[in-house]
Amino acid sequence: MMGASVFACLLMWSPAAAQAPASAPLAAQLAELMSSADLDAVAGPSGEDEDRFVAALAFPGQLLVVSARYEVPLYVEQKLENRQFRDIYIDLNAASIAGTKVLVTDAGADGLHAQDDAVDMFDDGSSVLRLNGDWGAQDMSRDDYMQAAADADDRYVRMLNALIETVR
Image (cartoon, rainbow, N blue to C red; front, side, top):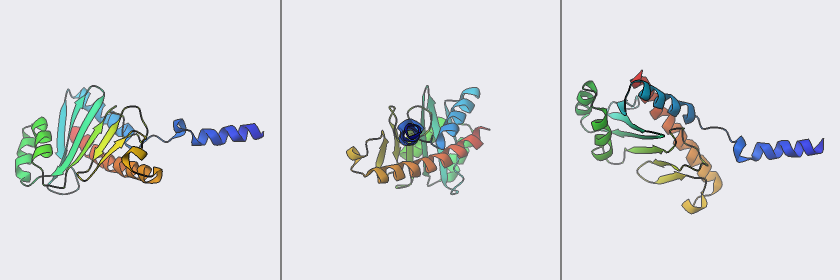
């Protein structure tokens, strides 16, 4: 009986038992929607601010997602009407309002995993979080790293939801 309890405790603390990130099903859904619609890029309003937009590029097994405020929203809105999604992605990366850009590299198009072989990255403009499980190399405590990963995942969920609404 005691052996079963020890095994159950070890299982609860193993990395394999770690909960999947909330972004995982949404990233898969977006990738599938884009593939079904034969899109390699998509963009739309973020739903947060009137001048904030979100865009994504899809590659086999990878999503690159950016969100930023744009100084002239009308310019982006015109490109949205013309379905110039790749151009919007480039604009948000290059010409967004300083300090407002968030860039996500989802290496597996499977959400932001705090500990994964494929290194996801979350860049909020002030720092880059490498989601590879190596918090020490990023001068973070384990708790700070896990909190940063959870915060990044929350932000990515909002970005993905906005994009999914756009594709539907």
